[in-house]
Amino acid sequence: MKKEWVLTQDAFDALLDWLDPQREQAGTKYEAIRTRLIRIFICRGCLEAELLADETINRVTSKVEEISRGYVGDPSLYFYAVAQKVHLEYLRKPRTQQSPISLETAGNMLSTAPVTLVEDFEPEYRCLERCLEVLPKENRYLLERYYQQEKQAKIDQRKVLATELGIAVNALRIRAHRIRLALRQCVRTCLEQEPAH
Image (cartoon, rainbow, N blue to C red; front, side, top):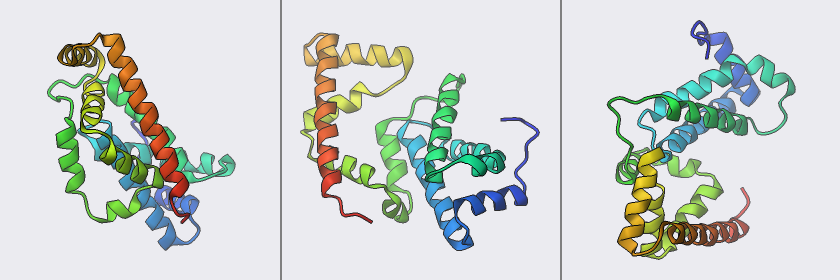
């Protein structure tokens, strides 16, 4: 993002207008998007989740005039696409004194979030949580460990996990893949049963 760009009231008003012509509805949508962005960054292990969410919103706001002319569809999806780019940049930045966030820490951060967050979940996340709850304990443990860490630490972590389980790393990959497929099918089935809002 250009360093000289500064959020102005006019730019913010243009963002709200793009989200919804009715100001109250626009404010509600804005809060839901920001909350979801924070949750996405927390789930991806980012310690600066709120800053990254705000950076995402600022990037969209800085281009809202341009975006609003040609973009068709749910504006929140545009935010999530920008969040993906912000996350990739975050991963590339060297972090001197930060350590990767653990699943336990992320869980604690999410559990202390306001109760209204639960109402903001999209059906996919509700279904994912339900499916994770019914996943056998050993499979859930394997998935949690399998996706911890980043870069070389992730590779090392997977070697350790494979050794703990007494299997080869390739067999671990296959096992994780099969668990993911079962989880994906569970989510799809759940979504089919999810009432329309």
